[in-house]
Amino acid sequence: MFVEVSHPAPGVAMVALDRTERLNALSTAVADGLLEALRTIAADAGTGAVILTGHGRGFCAGGDVREMRTNRAKTVDQRRRDLARMHDIPRLLRAMPQPVVAAVAGPAYGAGFALALGCDLVLAADDARFGTAFLKQGLASDFGLAYQLVRLAGPAMARRLIYLDEVLTARAAAEAGLVAQVVPRAELAAQALDCATRLARLPADARLAMKRLLAMAETESHEVMLQIETSTQIALVTSAHHAAAVDAFLGGDPHAATKTPQEKRS
Figure: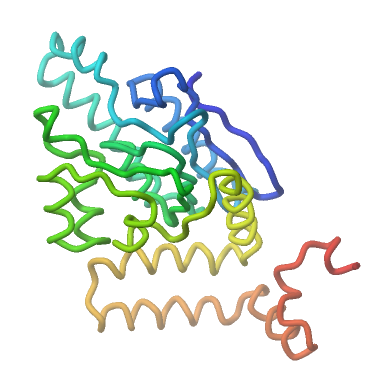
């Protein structure tokens, strides 16, 4: 409920927030559905890439303000448990073996902004809007938003966006390094599917290793990363995928290793 899972192409799972009457606001029920869907996909070896999107007019308007009112009656321990469970979502986006492509159209505010930035790549429709929205609600950020903004856009831009509650257009978000690509809204679904399909076709062992390396590179030193890259590369150089890619390249078809059987026959 509130989260729809589909498989639009071989090896690709699409997870869509489906609470359109509330701009896909993250209620407890929505968050629980999203977490369950992501956990199931993360354990599926047949899925190589994920698209995270929202149905309707927007990606995600952030937390559910109506639920915030009812949550006043909860104890501190209850609130802590609720938020800890919700924070399993950005943890899982980072830890799951598949790269996740956020396909953002319309508003992505507050926790919705953080949800998009927690993905490996962000594709934005030209009508996408990104904003923090926390301070005007009397709240600090959650879902890892402060971490993501400082890491991706730098401390100065993070302070500007959070303190001044500035809303970024898709183009401005791309210029700030928060969005990988901006496309017309009518093309967003097709572009996201094309991107995810390309990712799903990559050799699974190398794809997983690269996702882990990129995550480690955010905190490790240059020397440590060189050591990790050495051990990773030694493991991959003996893989069947690498051998097939080398043979294909030397055989005159450098893309053969990632082609589908149908493409190889044509």
